[in-house]
Image (cartoon, rainbow, N blue to C red; front, side):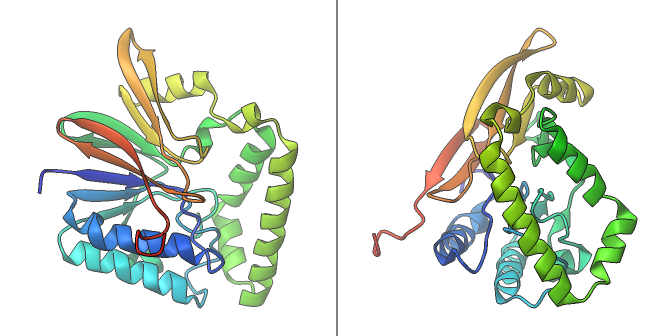
Length: 248
């Protein structure tokens, strides 16, 4: 197999979408195990209320990651806006490495900035305020000590409010701020940025420090899978069927 690094994001795995879970499991078994590395750039789960949540889905995902790592493919995870409560217990169970929200990696000789992408959407002031508050360590500590049922009710309320808020916002507000993209790429001294979050898969060409640069946006998995395949010779943003050919 030729050297390959894979990137995915925004699967939003949940018990209500077994088709996405099945596609993810096929991807892990048929593709990820043959890669040099797998990077999950946030929102793997539709929502997380803590590692103590009893969930067959979470256990199955952790088992798939662990098997992948045991077969030689390291798995790296960056939190998204939906699954930022995924913690060290899950990471240990899955044998995955938790990365900071912004990380520069050496991608076959190309310094590359990877992130979930929500920090680039600075025009959405309401969301950025919510994000700052929910990342407070002491608040997360308190949240994890609430009864599990109470946390589940809070999560249901947040999901409902988030869906309503998204319907009311102008799409441009929820997209990245181009000046912030340039600022972050200059800050980390890179010509390549990979992220998810916006659910707008595309490869954008831009100019950073008078040099050609690329911003690659991963797609969500709502209607089809989205995988960025990178080799020493280039990159390809690909789609995947949610259903196997036998069931199509």
